[in-house]
Length: 252
Image 1: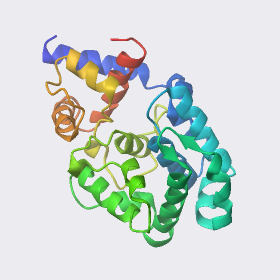
Image 2: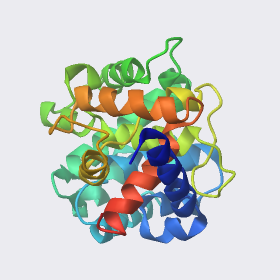
Image 3: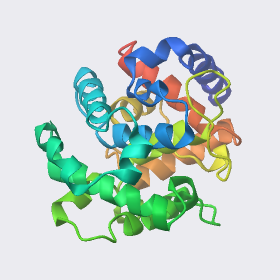
């Protein structure tokens, strides 16, 4: 396809898959259970953190996370006692275990009490959200923690595509007009968002000739971001729906 035909094709697919029928099949269904801003963003952050592997397993683990927080994520994060975390011992999702989960709760409490919340922490006055993610990780791990837990928060400045955090940011920042993303954060512009680059989106992008590099890393993310921002400078990450839908649902 010529570049203008490719853009038209992806615009069509983005519109096809960005609708509420997408929600029941996707991890985004977990934060959609809540209405309060802080509940949504905590549920979204935790769910995005474990969003790798089998989607059915992700949904099951995300639901268990919410249940263990009494289905009140913000209240639990702010007001939990150390003894409340003992029930987390039943939790494990692949390599994310109860110790990781317990630290994430402590780190989130620190962020809300001492750093004015998640939105504020990601909203650095610069053009690169990837720099903001790097800053977020440094603050997130300022409390005492096991070194192994750090692997569950990616750092773009160390070469990661940071798929899960970029997905979380898409959920929080993009408009809720189509009923999928939440549009809860207004300190970050949609033009700054990066594609949640994963196996599906990366492989489809290569088949379409949008990517040349084989790895799904930070350099590849920059490559695909630059193209998608030409297609739609104001909302480049809408194409996540197109690329993911083509791969996951159409086996493109």
